[in-house]
Length: 144
Image (tube, rainbow, N blue to C red; front, side):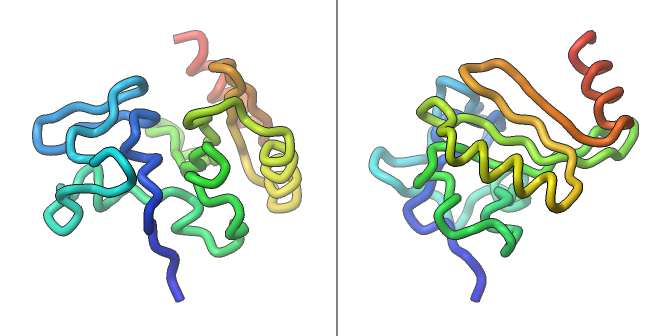
């Protein structure tokens, strides 16, 4: 059985960046089409990019526990890739509250167990660990 967004709209609530039908959303500005409460008003006709192609890691990865659903932990986990090098990493972004210790602890343990590159934020400050190639890529990104 595949997971469903259900009443979770964290990716649309103004924590990520995108444009849906010429209406931009970004941190501090929710998607124009998300209704207050918990639903997308255009879900059946949502645009391919960014809406259909975006998959939060909770939806895409069955290894992620049920309790890590974004609207339950106020955090979004996204698989990202550096365009120039192709290096993949998991990015954990706060989405409505400060990252909880138990969530961060799970995330770090999971990443270490799986040998993943990871980046997370606490109060807007970025932190990361992973392979040397990933560390070099992050350092390059930060100094841009």
